[in-house]
Image (cartoon, rainbow, N blue to C red; front, side, top):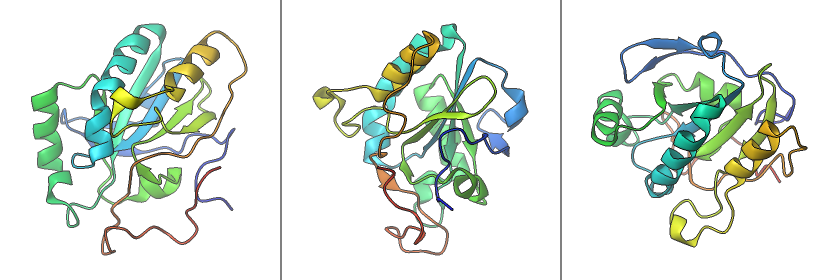
Length: 192
């Protein structure tokens, strides 16, 4: 069995606390498209691409696309990734997405998150239609040559075939509790 969700798989449910103080489940989102992305506070690939992600969220939210960020990193690996620091980061940056905390790391395992950032796009029936990167240079978006996330959202919303459906996420690996900061589960591998 593959580590990461496969195209066509149903979105795994979650029940996670957000920085706004509320708890959210998958069923709380009824938009046409749901983008779940694994992110964090400290990763240079996340920090580098946050403003590009903001523009994408602002562009597609009015079109029925909902964006939910999940931080699954161990606070014991990077204190910057603790829940209080998540709240602080959202207050400072006013990002236009929900930011959920997966302290147990169960949701990262359910989705098969590999990196920060790692994007999963689900259709209205919550089947996976795309997984991978948002852009091809998240550390330095000024050198970006393709925005895969926007391309697939455009195609899907226009009723066209999505291609590619899978790309490799580019970023830092998830920081697993009790493991070296570079450790990944042995079954985790590149998607393409």
